[in-house]
Image (cartoon, rainbow, N blue to C red; front, top):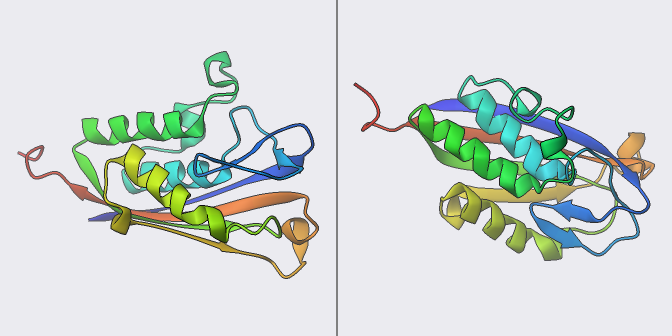
Length: 162
């Protein structure tokens, strides 16, 4: 079993949709980034790549590449799963915390978990998403951005060993 941790942060701006875990959330601000800036998915990608010892999101999907401009982070998550499979890994579980002062994310968490489980080809019970605030402290508390932390564990596929 291998474990990895992921972290990502994006600035909140006007004129962009807010997408978290592949869910478009009604809000007056969205996250700025080269892709769709899904901070939750980006943290999960880094956790998965870290657990496999395969670097980070920037190594595999650099923001200098035009092909990734505006791309869905759920598609990047799918590409990450394919990278893991080439190394003989399968996902044991993913746990994510989104740090955001607003909007309230609780109503959207079940869909986020379903989206992650679907893309990662694991059961909903293997995915956990939580949301918290910073009680008004720091850049998140001042509503300047959002962050996400993720932990993932991988198992080596026995069929791939040998």
